[in-house]
Amino acid sequence: MARLARMCFQTFVTLLLALGFMKAAGAEPLPWKLVWADEFDGPKLDYSKWAVEENAHGGGNGELQFFVERPENVRVENGQLVIEARKESFSLSGQTRQFTSARIRTKHRADWKYCRVEVRAKLPTGRGLWPAIWMLPTENKYGGWAASGEIDIMELVGHEPNTVHGTLHYGSKWPKNLHTGQPFVLAKGTFAEDYHVFAMEWEPDAIRWYVDGVLTQTQTKWHSDGGPFPAPFDQPFYLILNLSVGGQWPGPPDAKTVFPQRMLVDYVRVYQRTP
Image (tube, rainbow, N blue to C red; front, side, top):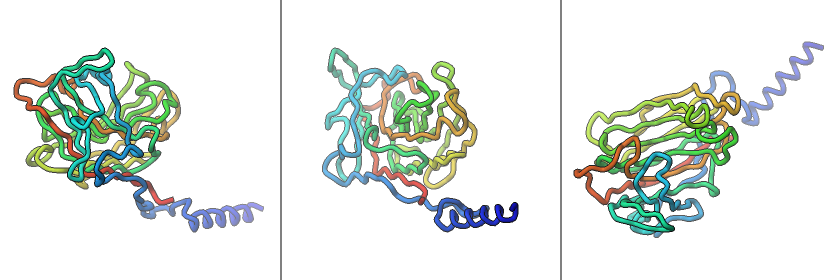
């Protein structure tokens, strides 16, 4: 009976391998397949892929901008997305701010669980500027931020234009949340001088960051008060692109910060493992 059970199990595993549901021990990972992309080749932003936020809430970070939906701040031109921060007084719905900018997201349009994200972008420079490429959970299954997680693919503070950061936020709800990550410093020049490809690979037991194809860090340890590992990074997340002004991390702009400043995005591509 035991021999028969082993034979049946081996046959079952062989069938799963043949159908592609399992990988043999030591086998190469299944390849990444493109599942979603925006090349920004059209005349305007594709609203089937992106929503534009409008708010003056400061993002919970004491930011100074008003995120608005208008061509001065977010547009597609010359085959690229332009997110532009401007120094100007702007009022809407009883709120007034002295800077404007934009934030776009795929929420309610596209989200993914386990994926590779690639963004080719050219970043702004100057104190008080804070471009970011990041992800948030579609549903806060494990509780409020950051118990349900946040994945920061790329962040830069403008007074350090040669350094980008990749970070995970997890653990408990604020203010008992945790974050872990490492910076990456260019050997020469700044991220404002040319385009660079920022990538993140998210799998059940590891999250990896890349700049121009170079692996910059790997994280394998995280947790959530709301559930067992790999929570909170076992749920669908959506993508966000924005350019903030000011905030607790970069601080406010100074007299040397030139406006307007732009975050230019050549493409956004999302891949998943072939099933």
